[in-house]
Length: 397
Image (cartoon, rainbow, N blue to C red; front, side, top):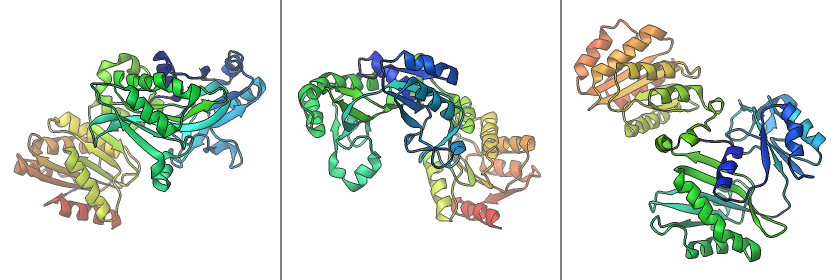
């Protein structure tokens, strides 16, 4: 689960991280009061959407010459003017795709005198099985570009979970970021704070880009991107309350209600599979034959008829889907249950695109019998390769 920048900063502030004063607003009427509550005279007006690249983004409604989704303001009047242009309009960034995202809230923040911009993130480094700091002197930039062009400028420091962030760990990070003086002193408290916030709240990612050294030498968290492990949210009601469903795909929201592992993608072949590994293989073979999957959908090993029907409805609700591939290997999941769910869903919502079904495993003959006697236009497949060829052929022809 992702949260907005202003929410992430509020959370980090609770742990003692240095962040600027700021106010989240949801209407233009709130802009002036928000600015007046801040020290000024420099303000930053930030679009709050779940996507990166906001500063370089463009608003659809304002034309190619308009300013981006993060703007400086040198007066209260300018803050209000920015709010009028930004709220309610659609911001397109490198991460939103051409559709963009509507800006429904802004963060008006006190400005900062920046001496240096650094990069700092925490994530689970699966190569060592530990949470790790990933830091670079190249802050404020696309970290993927830094990794590609100058990988030597990125340093990873893994943290022993039993010891936590030690003085030696801090020293490595300080050296990697070339900090000295006041900034090096601030680092002794900041990096343990970030680690504690990450661990306490079951974050999956904490990215501070940029982490800045101000003109007075102190460190400040200038931006913050946070996502949480969805499997751990049951422990954090306060974090669940921060969820903004307007930023999420409606199909993924519906899937979460049925405990389905569903991720919307950009392709045109809908997939319904049981088991994450089999789902990945199904997507791979679709790509092998020249098409793109429209989703990752794992119904799990113990799904019942209603859950399967729900998954099928979610897939067919995607207007990009031109064909559907159901690929089931019945172990715990029984093929007849899948068949009953598919038939029930098709009978309810109709079938407007080609459907190829490959069943194998427990109760496979019964499952095939249910499909064959349904009277529906379902194409059977003998194996995964056959299924992929048939669904691609159906779409092409």
